[in-house]
Amino acid sequence: MSANLRPSRRKSTKAIHTPPSPPTSSSAASSASTSRAHSPAKRTTDERATWQRLYKTYEVPRKTLHSAIGLAAIGLYASPHVTPTRLLSLGIPATAVIVSADLLRFNSPAFASVYERHLGYLMRPQERKGWNGVIFYLVGALLVLGTLPTDIATLSVLLLSWCDTAASTVGRALGHHGPQLRPGKSLIGTFAAFMVGAAATAFFYTTLVTYRPQTPPSWDPATSSLGLAQVSVLGGVVAALSEAVDVFGLDDNLTIPVLSGGLLWAVLCWAGYGHS
Image (tube, rainbow, N blue to C red; front, side, top):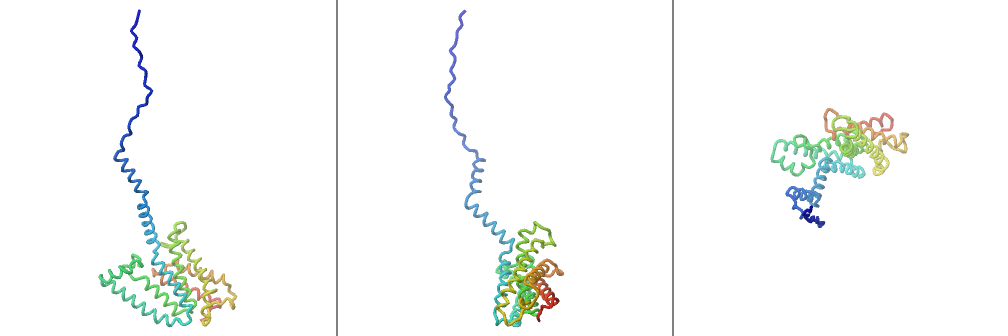
């Protein structure tokens, strides 16, 4: 019996090429978004935002002024013609002017607007509705200048200028790694104040006192049995304590120089090394 056999069809081995499908709108948008995210303009914007955040967080203008006052105190102490009496005669009227400006700011919205437009970058938010921190800074400096020996008064201003800045800056950056002593005050920030205070005290009594030989210092390494290391640690301790404690809610620009200068002077007098 014969059968009709159909010839088998041979499968083609030639590959079939299909054109790629055009990108969808969502994938195109995603690609464009990724491209923008990595663009130089985007990176520049992000970097600017980061610097602005750091600038605001660490109060760069305020802390720069804060620290610069310490440098000014060094220059005034090293000048033989500048006396505490002369500084008081200039500082008291200057304080009165700033107090008057604040009173006017509280009662004149127009003046407040102009004032804050030009000086607001130096003010904390709470100072816009309250007294300017510069007033407390000046009052604290004037109090120690009028009541303490020249070297102790100058050193207490240095402790305010540099230790408070160190405690604030280090505390904001690293304070969360350690315990909090009280709201806004960390152990790490206080330790930074101690270290800077000890260094400032050592610098003052080894270097700065030589620029004012006409005024006997309250501690003289040539005649005192109290060593430089002990006096430096004392300066660090009083700076850290003054920075950490809260005195009836008073501004620390006032309390730090008064407490640090008063404690340092009291200990030196108690130890028999203080000179009036």
